[in-house]
Each structure stands twice: as structure tokens, then as C-alpha cells.
Length: 302
Ligand code: FDA
Image (cartoon, rainbow, N blue to C red):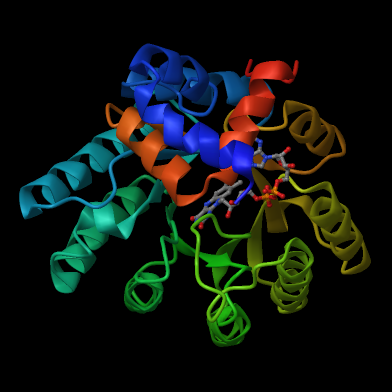
């Protein structure tokens, strides 16, 4: 671990919540759905789509999981009423995955039904490797019933090529990202170049099989590679999208949109932002470096 990032992570708990909040603000829309709706509206006005995530994974009771499901249903209705161009990103541990797999699946099905009525779409985020098998299994089971659902593949996982080869048979709608959790070498590529190479390989496989891909990265090298593949395989702009996180690389996202590609921004919101930020920082101290960088650069959130 980079010693500076390590130092930031170690000292963060001593930093007043107000100060952490000042920097988290860049990456999180706010406490309430109104904050998220405002962020979606701003993005829509700049020709970008959104995907909204209600913070709060790893619930510990079934009641919390039911509350999360109800909150997601309300969010879907608000998208419709307020005519916001946004879909949902959900984490299965928030819907009860670690408590009861069948209960989690049923909870997800209820969200998917509401989304289908509103012609909206739900993306199942991919969490750490303890969830990969269950997440793919639940995705497959709901995909048989719904076509408004997609999943995420993490390029750093060694297993992902096998998973992609299986998923392309079902014409999967996939978000491809590098992967954010710290995973052991046995299961995940560790080097930046290895992860990039695998990302390119998986993207090529998915696009060649005409799967819809959410190309989720802020990495110039990967975006350049994606441009090349999309052009040579003659993709129409509605057959894929780029995706980025709220608050990250506004320069890049504008240039992608200006080049005629569609862009969707991931918008986390919710009261649990502090616990979420601290957990993310502990899981992956590299993010601490990004935060430090954001303090000193001019690429500020709009
Ligand atoms: P990389 O980390 O190399 O970043 C490239 C450059 O972008 C950096 O040099 C830096 O300038 C900038 N940057 C990247 N992340 C930043 C940040 N947080 N703050 C500030 N600057 C940053 N992961 C996962 O495991 N499961 C999931 O479901 C998802 N979902 C998801 C959705 C969307 C829309 C995105 C964009 C990403 C995810 N991720 C994710 C996270 C993903 O796996 C990955 O950790 C980050 O996107 C960072 O990887 P990059 O490809 O951007 O490269």
C-alpha cells in the first residue's frame, strides 16, 4: 500500500465528520432523494443519463432489507413522476443476500416488477468475491423472468473470462469495470496492466457477441481501446454506453459526450454516506489518494 494513502486511511477516523463530508460531497449526491434527483436533473440537462444507488449495503436484519426494497420502489416512482432519465443500481447484500438468498431474490423480483411497469432498468452491482457466485446465480434466475435487469463483471477477477463466456450465451446486459474491492492474488489480477489487458479482452468478447455493455471506467487507455472496438465493429450509439462515477474526471466525461457517445453517471446518495465512505477507504486505500488529489486539483464537482 502506498504509505501516503495508508497514512490518510489511518488518520481519517480522527478527522471531524464535517471535513470528511466536505470531500465526500464530491462523490455522493447528499442525504436525501431530493439531492440525488437534483444531481440527475443536472446531468440530464447536460445530455447525460444516471443510475442511482441508495447507500447502505450489508444489512443485518430482514426488516432493513425490506425497507431498502421499499425505498427503491419509491425512487423508481419518483423517476417516473419527475421524468428523470435514470435507472437503479442495487447491491444484493442490501436486499438481504447474506441473510437469506431466496428472500433476497424475492425482494429483487419485487423491485424488477415495479421497474418493468415503468419501463425502467435495474443493474445489480457486483460486490466483493464472497458474493460473486450468489450474485451471478440470482442474476440468472431473475433474467429468465425479466429483460430489464443487468449485472456487473469485474475485470480484475481471474474467473471473469469464464463468466463472460457463459453470460454471452444469454445476451447479457453487463457493466464492465475493473473492480473496487481488495482481493487476494489467487483470485484477482493485481497489476494495473494485467487488469487493463483483461478489461480489453472481456470488452472485445462482449462486443463481438453484440452484448450491451456499460463501459465503466475513467481510464484513458481503456476508453481509447473501447473507441477503437466500437468503431471497427460498427456499433450504433444506442447499443452501448460509457459509465462514470459522480465527481470523477469531468473533463473526460464531457469529451466522451462531445464525441457523440452516451454517458451514464453513477449517483450514490443516502444517510449512510459516512459509514460508506469510511468502509470504501478501508477496503481500497487507493481512493484516499484520489481524494487527496481532488483537494489540490481544479477538476471540481459541478
Ligand atoms: P483507475 O482506477 O485507474 O482510474 C483512472 C483515473 O480515474 C485515475 O487515475 C483517477 O484520475 C481517476 N479516478 C478513478 N476513480 C476515482 C475516484 N473514485 N475518485 C477520483 N478519481 C478517480 N466496482 C465494483 O467492484 N463493483 C461495481 O459494481 C462497480 N460499479 C461501478 C460503476 C461505475 C459507473 C463505475 C465508473 C465504476 C464502478 N466500480 C465498481 C468501480 C470500478 O471497479 C473501479 O474501481 C473504478 O472505476 C476505478 O477504476 P478505473 O477504471 O476508473 O481506473
